[in-house]
Length: 298
Image (cartoon, rainbow, N blue to C red; front, side, top):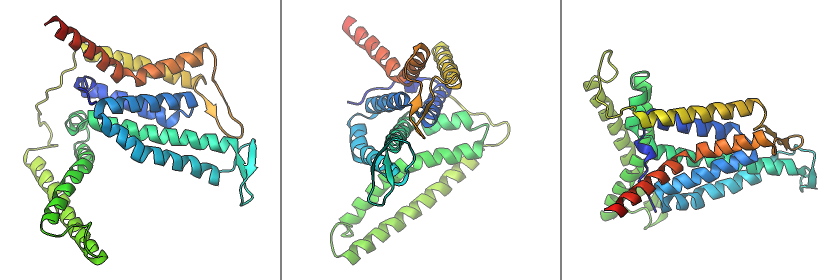
């Protein structure tokens, strides 16, 4: 079930710092515990944001992609000292290559899931608010790019339904007719995309976007709640970076599996990383309990 996300109501800089931290940690920390924490928290937050759509997306796209990545690495990478067997080509199949393939698959799935959460929380308005004055042209291009995929999908459904009503469906008829109808739809979509980009650029230019000294209305205010969240994110970021520099999050797969797994400090680093990744879920849970408590009093 989809819920109301209270973390989205925080200041855009808080949202951006959070996703920057979790994405950087996910891409650079290959420790198996860190990867599992990142994937589990990303899936939890995605389900909280998107409900059944997140589950369907994970089963239809992310899971097959993980299986493909896990199989491809040991098939082409033969490094490692623990030889399990030999492939028909004569190359060795090592335990290290299998585990590295699994780790890479988990990392890739985590990054994609976190980006789906980012796309739901960091709207184009927030992105333009953060970077509109620093890099106005690039922020507008990135904002349009992030919005393009969902808008293109909606418009494609509209055009496909309109073409189907006039007898130009891509699922019926001969192969030549279906290809011709698909080309027609593609031509319409390309024209729509180009016109939409030109109209957006002209609209922003007519409003003085990017001009020196231009002011902009903003509904975002950095209040005490945002200050507390900023301090928390800074603490987690510094603690995790310190743990990485101290070797508490190090892990290697080649030529032999070795890394920090037990001990007070490695465990504390993983716990802080878990708390960081679960920050939106924890905040949403606190807000949900407050709301239920208020409802029970009325």
